[in-house]
Length: 511
Image (cartoon, rainbow, N blue to C red; front, top):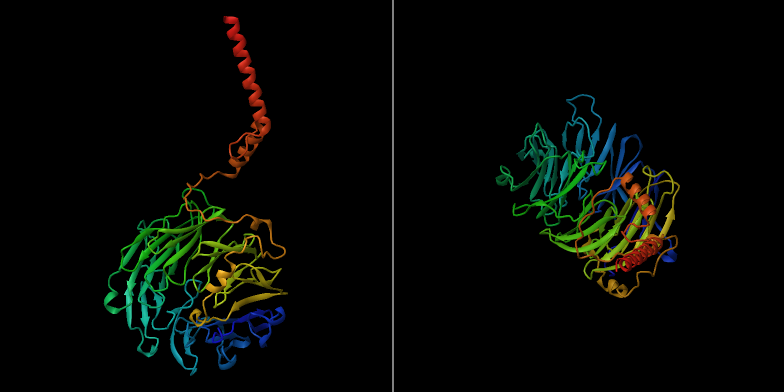
């Protein structure tokens, strides 16, 4: 589409960041839109309108993402963390506190440079930063305090706390997406009473009682995942200890709650083992889960937790829906070999496969046509680089770096781009074996076939038992599927023939 915005890629190396013009590349190489700027960290706002760059001496620069010109600069001493609000209206900063009276969390207006709000917070962790959370359209904002969630008016922070939800023992929360109608809260188990997840309405008249609730024991932490449309919540419940002793890393369970309380319970997974990843499609009407001991299973469910499609098993732990919701990339990154399978969920066909070893980050372009993977520091100190693949798995671009810290698409609304259904039609007849890039492992030779029949999970076998079974199989001539080897079969026939002859001779003697 001629009216579609162009794709752009932010690339941060050891000495700063630059912005590339995204694909399609002329002559197969990207061109620079912004020359390298020295910084220690960068981040786009969720809507892609602003870009933040943390520089030396506490300087934080805010850029207009379209023109890539600096619109404002803040100098904040001892700043250790900074975050843009989803629409880029506010910059939130954290400074190391020197006294408990010091208000060390500040919310700044990026247009005027004014301080909109500040409060004290002792320290920050992954779960407590950013301190104030905004919903995607910035219509609602709230923060976690002792035994309560406090709400603010993002258009006027001077009003202070506009309302609160009292939840004794609350340890984590998550605002729903657009519309920001609900908030989920987590209370860990304590003194013999179970942990719980509760959903409250954000309106003042809805904040006294939860509209949905789920309790559970053996729960040390949770991950929330709201769908688009804010009607359903997936909760991955993590326990540090696995009571069945099947996993060193504890156990995980996947729960599903709807905001009206009509559904709350476990998602029916057909294989034992951890939940590696769960992702809602962009429509909010279905979600995919990769789960179970390796090889992991991949299942797509509708919003009533009914299985829609099985994508078989493989060395996978990562799911990425493209922004149009039609293509799903199933991959095995981190400590797995990097296998990727690209599925057209609508026609239930695999479009292609490839490999991206050592990937740390991965995401679809806003138009849903390209998939970017990056091997970045500090997670990986060697073999840093990025790869871009077409939506059917063919490799489009590859580049190695001495040190790569960040590689990501500039965010854009997927609605600004055309559909890719016409492109998918052109590759529906594509053979799975075609279009493989060089260096692709033999793991892709075996295509995954959608599996509609649920298999009973196999019983867990400890490593020593597997080893003993292998030795026994070797000695007795039986393979792992329980079938006899050729030699064993020959010997068995000889024994049966000998028994038959002996029985015939014995019968003759008796006669």
